Image (cartoon, protein in one colour):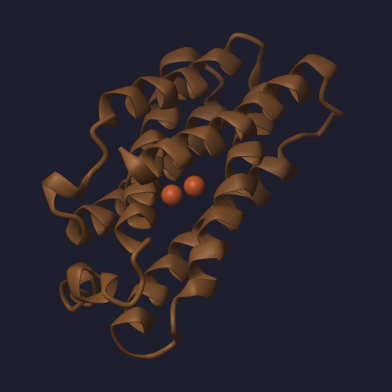
Length: 185
Ligand SMILES: [Fe+2]
Ligand SMILES: [Fe+2]
């Protein structure tokens, strides 16, 4: 996959798609937040099943972040990265205070959002050439996120409380706002 990344020149691709740098900046910000979500979870929980879940997911998110790091120059990254790190950490840590079920509901909400986020970008990429190479990267990230979502959904053995549903809604709305901001800043 690193080989594919090396063959993508975003500046060249951006000629045909002016929103592209903003899109990738938002992906990079999101994956930065994703790694921190799992750090927050690991800081807050002693549940061994949840810790194993968080550790495996965190390794995948780090791979996504490394891929996007390879695409964007440092000056093209979000200026608000410190904010996305804190927001991500809190998004993982806070639900641990309510229990593991709330954490799985949080990951379900985040990954449902991220699936749609990547899908919208995949739709914009032509299947061949450099856009096709970018599309392959986005598709592979999306597949991992869908897998994360399904795993989190499977772990929600009992129906979640209204409080957790409200929190999950907030997480979805927060993700949307963060992406809109990271596209520009
Ligand atoms: Fe990811
Ligand atoms: Fe993920």
